[in-house]
Length: 112
Image (cartoon, rainbow, N blue to C red):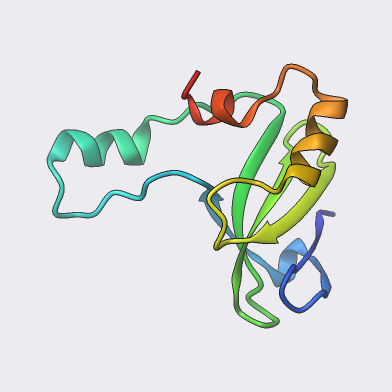
């Protein structure tokens, strides 16, 4: 079972108490944008094995959205942090790169 700690209220919650919200740190398209951009947003995503940054909502707790860094292959959680940030905190990136030397935030977002 996946257990994540809410960075707002500090509760360690099982995934049944949370709601997954998809990939973190992506530009969310609006319905009013052109069809190609919206189609790309909905259907075109890299889904490699390994570390993912995801959005989660503490549905059965404080109700706030937060981000989590975890491995999709081992379910290891590297940390959780506020959804207000534009990139993961340095301490979480350091933990990720210590165990996954080839991982970088820019590469994960498709910028390098």
